[in-house]
Length: 106
Length: 126
Image 1: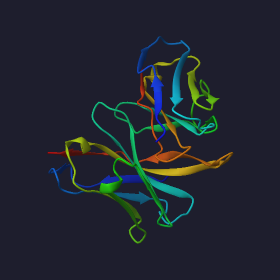
Image 2: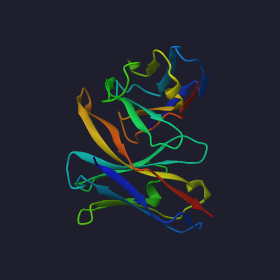
Image 3: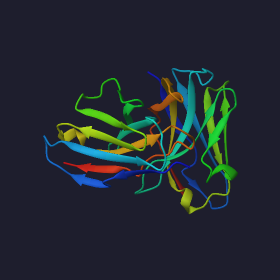
Image 4: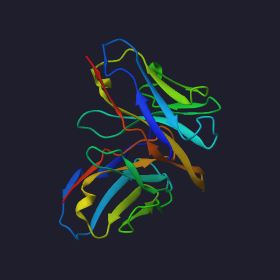
């Protein structure tokens, strides 16, 4: 199985800050990475799908980059409503593993 | 707007079989454009991919669950199901059903992502 490791596991930042979440795969996955946001009491939603496609309705402050084994989700200017847990997921090979999540607190 | 709704028991005894169903509204499980998937989240932990099912009957399961797991599609009811045998407390989680769609072709096959989630159903093994 391809292991996916996210860092940090949690972070605290202020409104307006630039935030980066790292996702590292145990082997090369080209750019077959998705990023999801999961807010408490809500259903997860996709923010960015491979290759770095911003989904409809997602604010442009979210962006993703990377290839091979290292990937980054960036929030350019953190907003209060971005408080959530963020997950990366690789779909290069089944099982389509998720990272363990990064909790973002404002 | 497509909707997915999980149903099933909230409590299952150890060693028994967990059976969950996902009813799909405003879309067809027979449509060959999608995979139909299950994901779970144990309390205080992250998302875990369980597996997915395609209309042709092909499946892909998490290897750690494969010996206990089966998924199926019921096109007459427009729903898909999960069966997990010999459950233990470690199977206690919120279970989500989901639709997986293609994001287009890539250098090594199609990109896929989860675009629609059910609201989730809490299952306790005790």
